[in-house]
Image 1 (tube, rainbow, N blue to C red):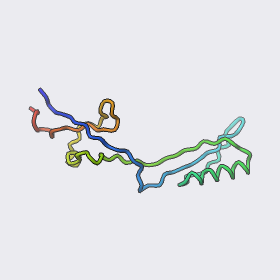
Image 2 (cartoon, one colour):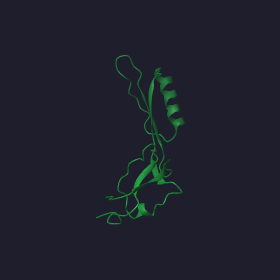
Image 3 (cartoon, rainbow, N blue to C red):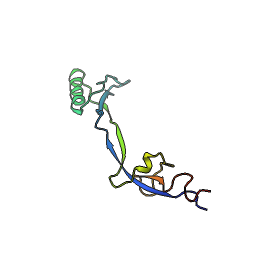
Image 4 (cartoon, rainbow, N blue to C red):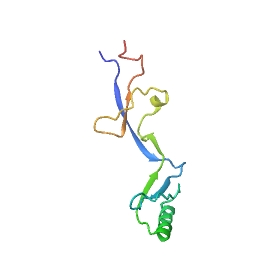
Length: 116
């Protein structure tokens, strides 16, 4: 007996334009221990590169760890039917086999056809 049918809905992952990305660097130069000087959070890679250049000029240190962080949003593709998602009928959010860009959604609501 089939209890529930599933279909796959494609989605996209995009950078959240409402939040600034964050860039930072930390000096990891040093013989016995790392320097540890940090640039702090900056909103452009150029700002981090400028900080590294100034730190290198002041200390002679040439080795840095860099970090980048941004925020992402998942949204159904333009051709996806999102009315079922809006009604809260998502049963499982697992990728479709061989397609990591899709969500598994029910084709009938709980208690609908095929449910005893």
